[in-house]
Image (cartoon, rainbow, N blue to C red; front, top):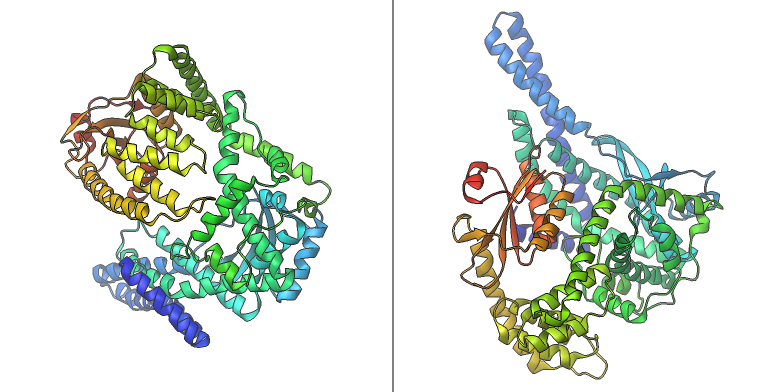
Length: 616
């Protein structure tokens, strides 16, 4: 299904749900039944063919009867796989009522108030989240087993009232008849997804036919049920607001959003920086508990809330955006008072033992990665010391590199003087201008825009970034600055031009004539070492080749093609891994990762991509 068709069907379903909710749910149930009808119909046809083919064999028509019996058996096997598709339960450490009596008492009170089913398993995880999942017991048919997954960091971050409001929201998904119907649709969606994955390598006639049906059916089923899933989120918020209070639920939503962003952008970054001085892994949760007891910095919290309120509800996730959820609760999008204390006491008097247990498990799970990161940071430190020793004669490029390395070692390091010194030695160095923009104080709009104008005038390589950054700055409310319509218009036009240029450059990089206009990679010895360390962490990669792609659109830009050999993986997983490499590799320019397959073949890579830069 084309994306435009998917969007149209979602919007149509939303309109149908708003106009007549009961009729919409009946149509969803009918469409869900169509999927069941396909599976049951295939099973019935398979049994009928078996019943007809067996007499043919008994009458001596071996060839015809055997072929028909084999086809019927294949169809029956695919049908049975669909009927009894298994979904793995969520991961976590199980908690019992004996371990945490207060938690289970609170869950029972919530269950009675929302008239929901029993929770069969309560799991504690290391994620900053809480969720209820209903796992089918018998595939497409039969009831489900309810799992409640509670994140240990969430218990640390929220006080008891706000945490219980989050649990009330999750339990609200299973409320009464509406909850049972929604849970059934949820189970059905997951069952179809799992079946589609299971049949991906089935080349039999029956398997191919079922895959074709699923390619038609599942996108339409997902689109048709999207409005119901989105509305279900609002209703779960409403239930939580009714039980805990709208103000409590709204405060929980805002605090989860802000603290979640802090975890992603600051805590884990700082924690992994400890590997510079610690050769053995350090458990994060003991320190996290201490840090979450503090209020977030005001500037960070305001920026995180502003960014969250700007995000619109889209079709990538059935969860609405924060602004829409707050408006549905009739609550203001302002910073609340932060939680005083945590909800850890709900785990019982031994909650510190849980923290220690998760710390030990995290260290065991991340021992290899920590060791590699420690070794890499040691190399970063040695390189930074070498550059520091030669600062008196260092070039602008050396100073920019030193600033980058210091940020690796300490994300809060003040590197502004290094960028300013680099610009004294080379007033138009793009790396120094770009770094200075990021090092300037948030409120210094004039200085930022002045640097961005200079960066734009320097050349085309960084123009897209300069325009994006300038527009983001102009869109952000700042004390003492009014909206500058003329500057906004100027940078928006510049962004349009830069975007067109970037699209042309990407077309050059991704053109199937991969081995035209290439040269050996231009990485320095240190850059190559960093790159090889990144590849070593990606265990599926057996060998890798790196070449520089010379772009006509941006002749000075360092752009790369990475060819990787990925044995033992299917093409879908190879594709996802390569797209992840595109986004995460720390090369000094854009990179397109390609795996050795049909195009390009391993023979073509060996012949044209020079020698491998990495072999496991």
